[in-house]
Length: 103
Image 1 (cartoon, rainbow, N blue to C red):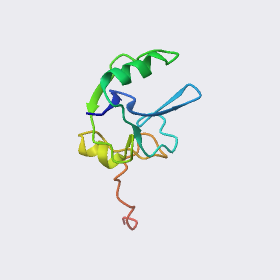
Image 2 (spheres, helix red, strand yellow):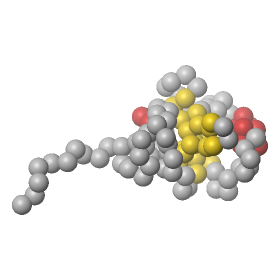
Image 3 (tube, rainbow, N blue to C red):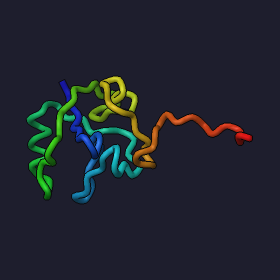
Image 4 (tube, helix red, strand yellow):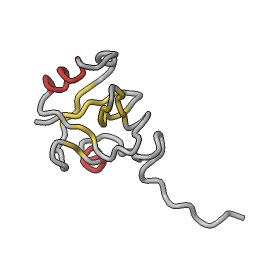
């Protein structure tokens, strides 16, 4: 079963580009899907390539990828993880639209 990498303060590992990791809670930078790994061994091997190594506190959560080798925010939510807003860290992706001004 595939897995995503999670961290208690950074959130869900989304992607890496030029050595920079993108996480759902700290810097999603427009990433609208999370990288899914075929197994925990593959995820561990991938983290071994990181300059700073495996972050303390990471965990693996089983996931059903719905975008090929990636999982959408909806798939992550179905796995019990928090949805994220791809453009704004720490913003509730399900926040209601603002209503009329209150008197």
